[in-house]
Image (cartoon, rainbow, N blue to C red):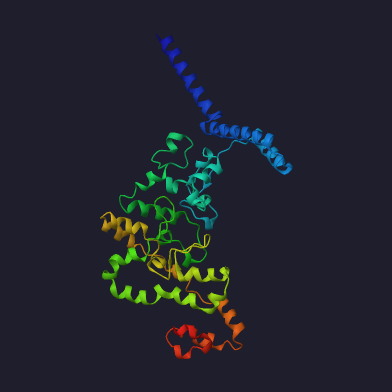
Length: 354
């Protein structure tokens, strides 16, 4: 009986040792990389047969050489964690998702909406969740939201949004200027999927707030809402090319995207300062006013004002008017009062009286 038990335990021991050694020598993540490199090698060899250009051939031959002798390794992003980058140390958070999800072109194609997202700073798990340090699929994918639709289902309340903003804040690089230290409000433009929230437009806001905050709304509508109309009549804007005008769009429109040249709304409207209204309006639309109010109470950082309200932000205009007015004195003495003291406006700038 003892011999049988000894034999049984010996078999179990050697079998478990074999499985352990197999996993150590040839782990699952390495199998993913082997499969990926084999596919890439096959594709490159196929393209080499069809290509005629010598430069393309040379490039493909280099790829074939690389894929024929690949380097299998754990790929990871060291996140900020609890330590500080200012001390030149990383924290305890690591994101190793790209060890298995190794095809960068496929990742970019599947994340085309957030292709500008700084994965090298925030990793993948900040949006998708899961266990970023794990290399075993079942562990790594535990609690994960693999697809956009699943991430959106977290919008039951504002807590999921706050958790995302808080994690972005904690993972953000430290600034040498304490006034630029990231706070929750810096990430109000992001939804639960990590995508930029949508600008809903001032009409959506005014549907309720025209009555709730009437004095504030009326004052803003008379001034900032219409600021772009005055800008469009300015001689330098009319004469300027598109590159010149882009400098005006940034601060005199709402939701301006420098990459596309498009903006959500003309003038400085509600979302120019309060940020995109998608999340707030979503909760209000589905009857969760309290959750919407929680979103609204997360103030935008005060340094959002500095993006436009900084000194010498109109230097290009100064140059324009100096070329047309040899003295240029009126620029310095009257510019801040042009819109209210029309009698002091130079005759050449009569358009400002309109």
